[in-house]
Length: 452
Image (cartoon, rainbow, N blue to C red):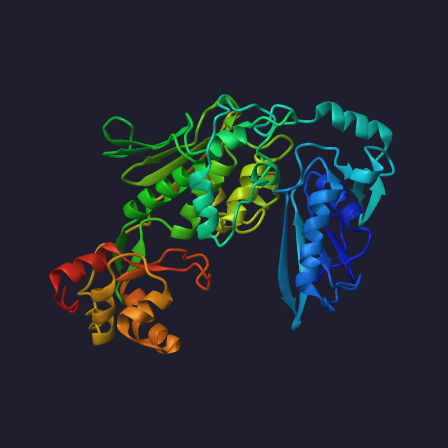
């Protein structure tokens, strides 16, 4: 590991300095990372009570830092040289200056990162940052409707094995300072006036509109899942034929596409009531979000994965529901498949253009696709909806999970007959499997895949 820098801090164990380091990173334009269980040299030594320390970190950051930094940090376990350490990732906050609650907004309680140390913030800087503090955020805007219900949100939390108690509106920061529902609550409520647009065109321009769908007037979480499901249908499997082999691939990289959708929805500027927009063309998908780059962020920092969540309350909910994995991970995941040229920034908008995967025309007779085994045939036969591994085991009357994986799931995945519902997290406890369009066709046809 590198030595400590202005963005990296090491601690051998959890100390009283946690809030000080957190505040310093939150007040910096780039955020930062705090490791617990590391020598100052970067050598890992591990953490004895890793689960307990992670809970203590979350609780202390939640209760001891002002303004609220919920949604602005991640706490995760990282394995280094065979030992487990805690990695706390901080995004740069938009409500600077952040300070230690019990010490107040003063030089004693407000810190900034200087080199590899957290130093007291000068009074003049505190006053300047406070004067610039973002007040027109969706967390501070009152909901136009105060008669809100959240049954959809509760169902999604239950599906993620989490529950919302009676204090959920306070815990999720859905209230203004005077106790009224804010605009975040409005977006997450069962009924609202926000609708996400998804259009499909015939051709490569906007002349011939083929479909015009709206997903919304409901919880933003539900609308997000509807958009993802619709694009999953559009993201068909195509064959690329080379001189040596036949390669089956998707029109768009599913992980990059998913990250682009989530980023557009979570980081959209809803203060002007302009929703993100999704447009499908024959040669590309265009994803447009309102708001441009977050205030104070440069394009270089955007591409390097620095995170300045525009809507930290939405980010927190989407992370709770496993729709977002880690702070700052979205753009790097997209860049693995698509270059920087796919992004276009204007003063008020950010647009990402994802091109269709180039298809190679046949040059030689393709190789014969492998025969479908009896196990795969049986698996396809029992798949009639999304199923987890335990449900598949029961339907196939099997007990050995390894045998299921090796003889049924893996071959069916390789043939393109089934797909994971969470492809970016293959080992997720919420992982399920479903038939692809190709799998559905095979099931309906009732014939072998060989020679098709």
